[in-house]
Amino acid sequence: MSYSTLLVELDSAGVAIVTINRPDKLNALNAEVIAELDDWFSKAASNESVKGVILTGAGPKSFVAGADISRFKSLGLVEGKQFAEYGQQVFSKIENLGKPVIAAVNGFALGGGSELALACHLRVASTNAIFGQPEVNLGIIPGYGGTQRLPRLVGKGIATELVLTGAMIDAQRAHSIGLVNHVFEPEALMEGAQKLLLSIMGKAPIAISLSLEALRASDLPLAEGLRHEAALFGKACATADFQEGVDAFLNKRKADFKGR
Ligand code: COA
Image (cartoon, rainbow, N blue to C red; front, side, top):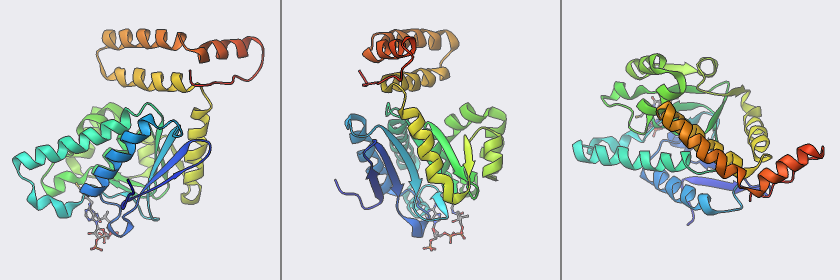
């Protein structure tokens, strides 16, 4: 499938840079963008050439300025629920990719844009990034996971304030509440995202995938999460990469992980 709203580059190390490309509309998420993200992330899961992903927005001004508001007039009770469910499904696909996904937030990350960044495993932002959940200004609520992922990441008190006030916050504030991991000057953002991703991709890939799965289980009650962790730890112990990692340590050499 060729994409009309996404630009995709894949380098020889396995870093895929996926750029949402509607800069004249500040990369707002219309039906086409969501469908193309769905398609690309579905295929990326089984594409062995893709080892990690950086998701960003085209242009200097915006990551994603939200769902495309021009579509909203046609939404009623049933359509609204379907709209939210499909977006949630696609964003969960990103979260469940099994490979690291970093949002490189290069400007506005509002509404669905903030929710898209939240569905990524890590977020880095440029100094001009602005985050917010302004849905209440339009008479709606976040529908692509914002009321669920934001409190899990920054705590319920701060998330409640952000969702109820629709306030926009800058990159420094987003960093101080744990919404973003690192802040870079705009010209250093992509390099910063790549360095972070490559540092993860240098580890044992199955251990990374199992770590992501275990971290997701931190949303469960503790006893259940611990059961998941133990089962996933067992799986990691059954890999050739585990043998390699331990052998490399004991023999004071660099591990050569094969993803097996
Ligand atoms: N949906 C559809 N179009 C959008 C959009 C969105 N979420 N956000 C921006 N755009 C469009 C604008 O309509 C405008 O299109 P036009 O040139 O055809 O008129 C273009 O993108 C540029 O936006 P503009 O508003 O002119 O830029 P700005 O710098 O003055 O303001 C924002 C930037 C982000 C503050 C403003 O665009 C905004 O508030 N957007 C909506 C944010 C939002 O509520 N998102 C959550 C939706 S649930």
